[in-house]
Length: 69
Image 1 (spheres, rainbow, N blue to C red):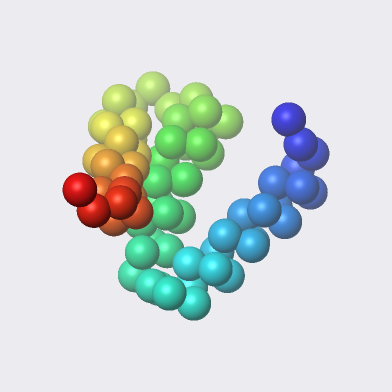
Image 2: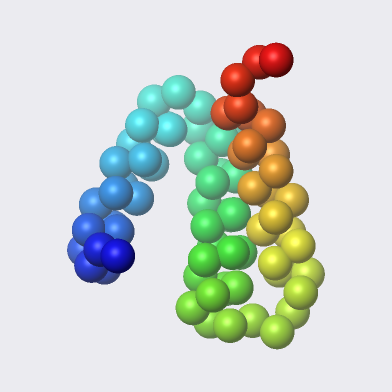
């Protein structure tokens, strides 16, 4: 795993790349990150609704980026 600084650099890179193509999509990415990574992992939320919301957002992201069948 990388350091916190490396994670911030990667996150900033992805945010800039996403912003160039679809600013609304960046909201989904940020909310999924917050729900799953920050609230679900670091803060250890006991509220399963937060995790479920994060998964719902993750599914939206997956549908948006998956190759057309």
